[in-house]
Image (cartoon, rainbow, N blue to C red):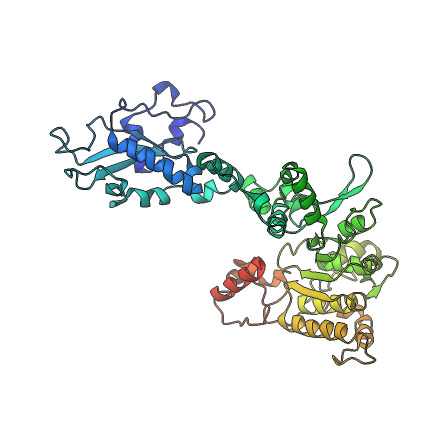
Length: 510
């Protein structure tokens, strides 16, 4: 609704009252939003003690409350009647006065009825005596002032809100007065929390850079996809913290500390596919920091882990050592902490780059006719996660700390947590107490015929999203519906239960 007359159609009554009381010029009704914004032409200014106190209170609260400061609240006289304080013969019959109030980003102001308690008191007027009416209820002005700003809208750009707040209260953040350890914690979050390095192909030669939120993240393709609306792209961008590289321009000391934090041993380096990892590890110009890769996080799909390991699925399961990239990881002598994250099998399940079996019949059809038309195309996520860890075991067992995160069944998680822990603790012993026979497990996997691949799912809640697509109760909550503990039963009306959604949200945030 870009034209003014359309923008005025569906206003709430608090704004519609003012527009009808002081309508815009007739020749502006068809003006577009960029051409004309509604301007209140109210009564002339008055010598109003109440309004002066309201302005002073907003200014004082803005120094303490960042949201009130960012809201840029303005209050104007709306009714031509006399001020309601101090009590006189002119205002004795008028205990309420109307004002117009709005935030800086709002086009239309809202009406705000104001009254004063104990108008006949000889004591000076204070803000605790001022009441405002909101939805038929009277409340103290200060209480209303803290609730009025649209916090969600104002804080979608927190840095701008904070800078505006600092200009009003005259304060600045004394970062140089903090201990160096605290500054490094702050700088870590300024740089995005997790570093997502990639290779810069522009400028003088190829070199590894810290990365941005628009590269080396699982939503980069969706963000750039023109089919997604601007609202969807904004939501996707919020899922990955945006690093603020302006911190490097503050001072030479901050530059050096921020660079150390970004490439330092405490910053976890995050990769979403083997290609980014390969390019970074093979780059001829690595970071100058010697221990820059001590903590590593891999957030790969099934296809991503298979590509990392060189696993092939045709005609049966086998490992092509010439395609494996595990020698690159084993070559990282400083690696002491590895985080292996497994993606949700229901998220983007139709993408072929996530599941190697998905388009097997399509790719092999021209050569082998319809031989693979009837094969399963979605593996059991529990079994595949176990297989991936089996393939990884000889390559990662020397790493002191290994964390398994994301969508992984609890039984698989406990099994491998125990095996990897005992394997590292007993690495110098002649025997192992975990009882795991890696050679036998590999032999069992590699001897499976093509008809048994991909592994069939027998989980209570199927790992194949296509089997759940027509189950409305499950499909509505698909992103959160991974059943880690196999708790789903067919008599459940809604999945996941509310308590499980809360638990999963804590797991994803943690």
